[in-house]
Image (cartoon, rainbow, N blue to C red; front, top):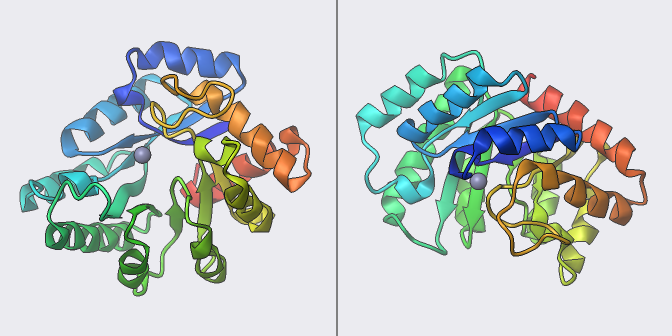
Length: 246
Ligand SMILES: [Zn+2]
């Protein structure tokens, strides 16, 4: 199995979490670096572990302090063979940790970088769906909607062939609409992620999350889609391989 989005560098002991994941059959993990500094740590983990690859970007929360130097350092990190995607990037009007103009400028720069490198872009959008969609209009590369939580974005996502990645919140009892959305995603476009250490799925909800827990999310998605968990897990691995060039 694969966990397509984890923040291993935010876990207490990433190496142990990677070992526990392997014990649960989760042999591949995409870890996300959210700044240049964090990206270096993500790549160090990817170098130590065959099954770990890195998604490298500057998070919208960091947009207020990101400089042109940071962007060129990010571009340099992307020369690493285990750097497979740009992100997470996008717009967050919910937390508003960074000024909106700065977020939009950074998002545009990261989309440009992904286009230049020919790598997929991993999108974070929160309370900013319309603006995120508008900014993505001109982007023709591969798109992953990370931690998909807005069912009304689904028609656009499917029409444009984007990958839709479900996280632990899709397992929560009240997330009926989200699971319904999961039934509408074609086999070739569905992904699953933990977003560790956040958003632990049922039945481990409320605890720090880790990649081994992807099994719970895949099981819930499979149940909604009336598929066997093993089949869906294999499908997700194939999708991730195609999307991220693993
Ligand atoms: Zn994330």
